[in-house]
Amino acid sequence: MVTRDTLEPLEPSEAAELYLNNRKTDGAADGTVRAHRHRLGHFLEWCEEQEITNLNDITGRGLRSFKVWRSEKGSIARSTLKNSMDTLRKFMRFCESIEGVPRDTHMAVTSPTLSEDDANHEVVPYETQEAILERLNRFQFASFEHVFAHLLHECGFRVGAVRSLDLEDFKSKPVELPDGTRIGPHIETHHRPATDTPLKNGKDSERLVALKEHSVGILTDYIKHQRSDFQDKHGRDPLLVKPRSTTRPTTQALRDISYGLTRPCTYGEECPHDRDPDSCEAARIVNSAYDCPSSMSPHPWRRAVMTHWRANDVPIDVVSDRFDVSPSVIEKHYDVRTKQGKMEQRRRYYDDL
Image 1 (cartoon, helix red, strand yellow):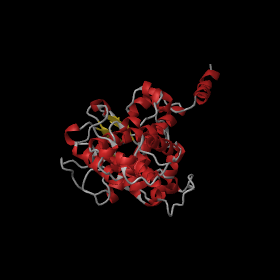
Image 2 (cartoon, rainbow, N blue to C red):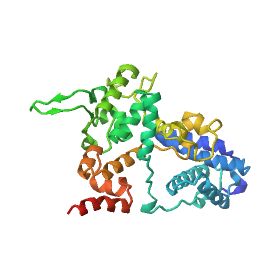
Image 3 (cartoon, rainbow, N blue to C red):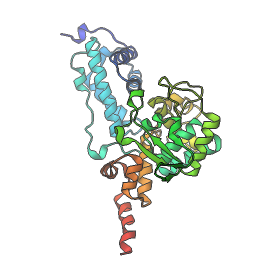
């Protein structure tokens, strides 16, 4: 039986690299490995503060101390704390397997239990999205970042849908169908799992999304002046291509762009976290943007856009069709208006009866 007297010395950062390499070998997705690296980075920071250079010295009391430290660092959401502790538990289980910590150490790692109210309801406020797009419109018009943010804001696409778009999916001019129906400019989504771009709800996610004239102009200028002309390994022409890249962007690459764009210092706001942008790693290094407490992934854009549409009296079935989500899910997870706000919106109809 492995005890503290029979453990092999194990330095924290070395253990983390062994764990991450093991996850890769076991076939974990790049995004998963990246997320675990980020979460373990906080644990390594704590170990450094506590002057822990050998994981043999980790105790249950120490792990609970880390949980308190992590929960107070940046006033994180309970869902974020749960993810952090869940990863740490897996890491400790791995360390047990290589005789770096005593058996059953992972059982001392506890995660908060989430209620429905604790679910991740982050949003990139609609006004913030407009501020980000205004800045892109002025300084990076029709850039890769501008087009990506615009598609999130105007179409409410999931990141997988943005990644799936091909050049031919963008219809910049009105199209006349065989039955004589004339449809305006739009963009199409297609479920293509055989060539690496599945959609969340399969064929049910396929739809036509109407575009305004302003959107058509941004996309047209991007294709004409910014987009790299190449085909992916499946012989398809991706709509969005990062500058100097010769591959379809990964989901993680698109998530990184969202993290970068939603840092307040990026769109002209003062840092709400009392950090100096000149020395803040999250502000200076693109790949560290997710370390900014205010940065957000693409999904919170979608939540705010749907809320905006509902607050402006757009019927729920119209929102459902455009954003590829059922009315019941919209009501439960995507419409973040307050009860008071919903009541006042209903009052407008009530007063007219």
